[in-house]
Picture (cartoon, rainbow, N blue to C red):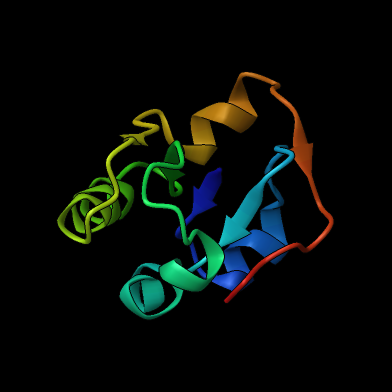
Length: 95
């Protein structure tokens, strides 16, 4: 599971990391929406944001909520784009 915690406007403007299992749940709504999106707390989750300011906090929150396989993508979406890695523009977000 790849989880983007940027705002929907940020995702709509710049796209998101191309992933088979992608969700966009903003940092502020994470605690309220994550269980519906990822009910199995053993699911591997990679969290990212634009420049790795919100995503470490989101990863910490997920761990506190009992998720056991959480990683923060510390390079952030900006560096992902700069590296020319795959981006999707199709909106597939939860919240």
